[in-house]
Length: 224
Length: 51
Picture 1 (tube, rainbow over the protein chains, first blue to last red):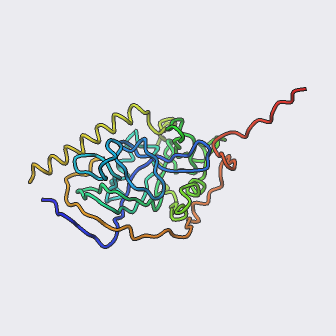
Picture 2 (tube, each protein chain N blue to C red; picture 1 turned 90 degrees about the horizontal axis):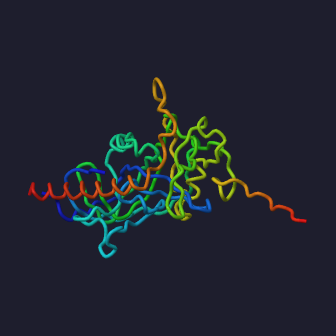
């Protein structure tokens, strides 16, 4: 049976995936979620809001709203292997506010992005910069990680420049970690498999994620 | 994102305060094709002279 009313002394550290976004005028940067939050842009510090019903405060049990993160970095990296997540950044976050704790992670109301831990070019090399992914939201372009070779003269934004464009009050708190050298052995992944996801897939994935959240919740209730 | 079974609900205060800029030295890659202000767009074309 779930414990009620936990009051930990300090916020949680978690890991999540997000797409990097840049404002239309290039002056502001942010992050967009992968599924449920794919159309919501948040900064280095954010408070969750429900995209379906603004009257309740996230995270609500029978809704899929709120920020999501995983307890283990390995789980986040595993999620990043999925085709639709290849162009996402792996973030380290601090989770606070109201929360629901699950086996593998949290759903919560307040978030601070602490670090960009990992980002890979579609070719498999470590990211050197962020370039236009060719997709976006109204007012925001999705950015995809690119290595130096694949940048090939395209305009791109260094990670430090991206971090500097996050919301002013806290942008310095974001630590851009050294990119891990994770070059793949053997033939490289063909370029062009990046991109921040087609909108219809994002909507479908959001619906599936909501169903999963509700099934998990139903399972928890049945277990009681 | 599947998080598994619910284990607890709770509240935790955001105890952090905004800190001074911290950027690791290893991430100081040179910008590629950077253009101040609008880094992902080409420099504006000069206006055409009309005589």
